[in-house]
Image (tube, rainbow, N blue to C red; front, top):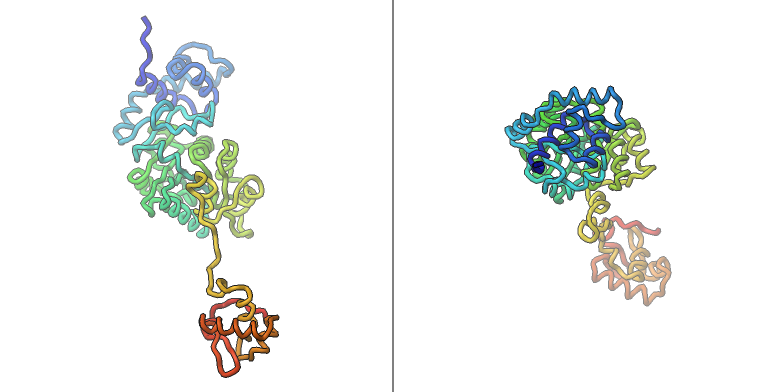
Length: 384
């Protein structure tokens, strides 16, 4: 009699596979789709032939499989106050399924207990590690404003723009998620140890790799695909022409997400990658309201219409405004002079001048009229 696998059995199998396979491995993803986690693990731990895989690669899988200890890893994450989230769990962000066979085997997480609802309303902010003061300020401001508006800020916990984005969200007492390219128990980079600690208290850290794993260059690249898939939109703040941030942005575009960029000085190499992105598929954004309007729900998250300041002169009727413009900027003039400058008749000019007098725009001195100090200082450009 065959015993049906339990969710616990599948969780253990996925935990083991997360240590055997590198993130984003399409072969493992294909086997998971075709056979499920328990059978996939059995294939890797027996002499079962692995279709389409070289002998060298097969040997690599099986060497790692010998050292997989899923129960230990699951106990470790529990000790850290975290959990291992699997695709069938209620907290699994379904947008990660858009990655197809490169979908994560599972996610190791510490921090806030609810990943799915946070990810549903999220923006990724990424950019240069060696950022400028301008870029750092912009990233922190965007993140803070988005967090205050109820959005989750996602980034990769690296130096530069990533760190600024996380700190901006934390400063606004908002939600932030760090997607790391190592185990959640391995603070990387070391200089961000305190930042990562704060993120676990106020936000959350997630990783595809099990506890104890270290980052590599390829793992950083694969980490970017998770950031791109998890967020509703990705904003790039400063990036050179060869930048991991542009990889994230292009993965986001390929997944149908909104891709955005903040322009910078044309003299800066840190602007070159962003400007290239904007020439291609990226949308230009300047602040959080731009981002929310592009990525938010229609009717719910539209940014307010941008308007210039309204001056009292803007509220005048066109004929009255024309007479007001007929007055000299300095000194005074009689009614005939004003009527001629305004292109109107004497009676019309006289009536409009009395209206302007009542409204406090002009003052009368005998038969002559002049602008009040308040009207002169309002800054409206004059025709003459």
